[in-house]
Amino acid sequence: MYRSHNCGELNASHINTEVTLAGWVQKSRDKGFIVWVDLRDRYGITQLVFDEERTSKELIERAQNLGREFVIQVKGKVIERASKNPNMPTGDIEILVSELNILNEAKLPPFTIEDKTDGGEDIRMKYRYLDIRRNPVKNSLIFRAKVTQEVRNYLSNEGFIEVETPYLIKSTPEGARDFVVPSRMNEGQFYALPQSPQTFKQLLMVGGMDKYFQIVKCFRDEDLRADRQPEFTQIDCEMAFIEQEDILNAFEGLTRHLLKEVNGVEVDKFPRLLYDDAMRLYGNDKPDIRFGMQFGELNAVTQHKDFGVFNNAELVVGIAVPGGNSYTRKEIDKLIDWVKRPQVGALGMIYSRCNDDGTYKSSVDKFYNQDDLAKWAEITGAKTGDLVCVLSGETNKVRAQLSALRMELAERLGLRNPKIFAPLWVIDFPLLELDEETGHYHAMHHPFTSPKPGQIELLDSKPSEVKANAYDLVLNGNEIGGGSIRIHDKTTQAIMLKHLGFTEEEAKAQFGFLMDAFEYGAPPHGGLAFGLDRLVAILGGQETIRDFIAFPKNNSGRDVMIDAPAPIDDEQLNELSLKLNLKS
Ligand code: ASP
Image 1 (cartoon, rainbow, N blue to C red):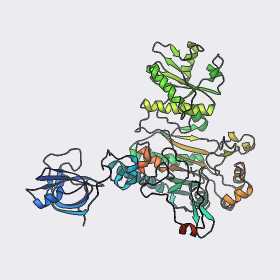
Image 2 (cartoon, helix red, strand yellow):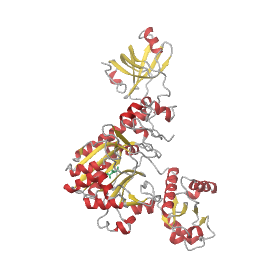
Image 3 (tube, rainbow, N blue to C red):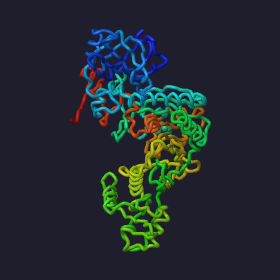
Image 4 (cartoon, helix red, strand yellow):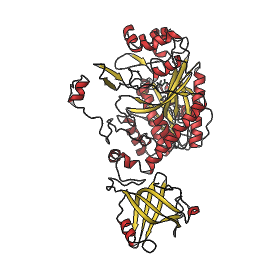
């Protein structure tokens, strides 16, 4: 028996018990005749004491030679501590050691295994197994396990069946590039790793499974924008014989359950916002509604004066910054520089101060009088003491810019409190999205999403106006889930694929299996998928997903610990009938 107890459970009730513990040496304090060692395992830290008078000289010498992270086993008696530590669960006791076994020595770790470590990101990733010994990472992984456990509990109780789907498949378009795997047995042919199990879960509905879920890895070969991973985990779900309303209720239920069980937070019914309204009011399809600062469109009250910048703009839009009138001229100039940074891309910013005496002072007083500025304040909801910030330009761009400013200001004002949870549904997304570069439309969600009833006729005449039965679940400014009601008949699916630019042959080659299935009695169905990594991070009150993933990849998609990806040797290439044609 390696241990009778773990390092987190002994307390005053165990005094005088003989125990055996095993773990890692966190640190030691050597007073010559007495040595204290902190012994650590997953459960906590227990103080060991080696005392010349009460044990032996030989033992204390061995204790003096213990290095950090040595793996040891000790036997001894639980005794009361002279100076107690009320901040730790084991703080009332220590172990008077009578036997010490070194199970394994350890090299000096390349960074300190403490909550606040001296190790940078790269070194921590290279030695991730050491990083995992640190509380912040360990606790994040335990937290993740709790969330997934609750997901399984809830969905299983609701009658969902967990079904695994294959990883070696054929492309499922979710808008990214596929990772491909060469097939040795089928020369010159490749599998694609799933961007999601989308088509399989639809086929499970055709197969009559009725309610499916899976906690599943998905793979997308994208340029890694901040805090994305090439492989990530979804809670993937699908239901048959449902309408959009059923899906929203089912997964609102799951989210509510998680918030309650994991965070102890009860939330009201989730608000629902039309996609068009989300864009109009927040310039963003994943609005953070923990705070107000809604957009106010100002075209009507700005555009028939002599101010050319506004007159020529497709959209003039502003937000009220609470208490912003206290900003100095210099601070406002800095804000203007901030919106002009290439990452935001605004050409400038106009502002109007809402003075304490009820007057206004704007940067365009030449063109706008007090009545005009009063309207700006009214429309943006600005009160005395606030600052109205106004951007103008092409609608989509200016919305994105003002949305970035809104989030930045909220951050600075401390309005993005990670302890507050504000979920909402964004519904009625457009079916198609115009790719500005190619001039082609592609599916905003994916090609299996159904248009709103009666709108399919619009596909030819006004494609960008067609709305989809598609919805996103948004939490604190992050999209944590998204899905749709699916097309479940071959004709509509064929029309959709045609509009996405597939020839009939291409459609058949890529999605023939799905369209065939639709001819054998496909029930109406729909579903959604949550991004588990992000969901866990937000519930855990963190912005970044990395510490909630045991072995994440870096920004270049590398695992620096195992050093992957890596070249393969000629023999392996040969076996796969592959020849390299490297560009560099
Ligand atoms: N497969 C979709 C995705 O990965 C989710 C869904 O439509 O259910 O975003």
